[in-house]
Image (cartoon, rainbow, N blue to C red):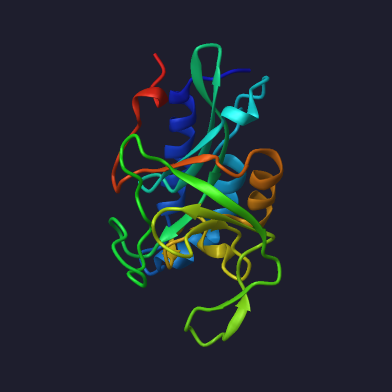
Length: 209
């Protein structure tokens, strides 16, 4: 059944509200760890499953809602065809320099693009938390052309309890299973990627009457 975009938003709000519940003594990380599977399974049901042109799809990443949505033009409309929870940078705001722990935001009318799709199952990273260098990227790293080095969409091996959340050093983390789905079913080199500003709501094409 095809649902309106407001239906998707309502589902997202309910799931995110669930993610914010818990005892007053729990940390944000504990809440994310305990609710991430619920959000991942329940947040985005009944996404459009009809025919669409993969060559015209694009990605929108919402810092406000901690989600990645794949959109496609269908019959003079723009519809969401897939949505996933994500983890973004621990610091909020526009990325200005390397090491500032911020996820870059695209300018209006100037989306970023996927410039490389790289196998990353054996890539490691040291987060400086005492664990040393660990596997950290899932199966794929979708490198983004943002004007900053090392920014991409990837899995969350070793850190899946942070999805959804704000914990990355600037990249967009997905659950390991979701980065595989995104790569195999939707992603392509040259694909536009819009990353919204902090607190930015729906864009005009996302509002369905």
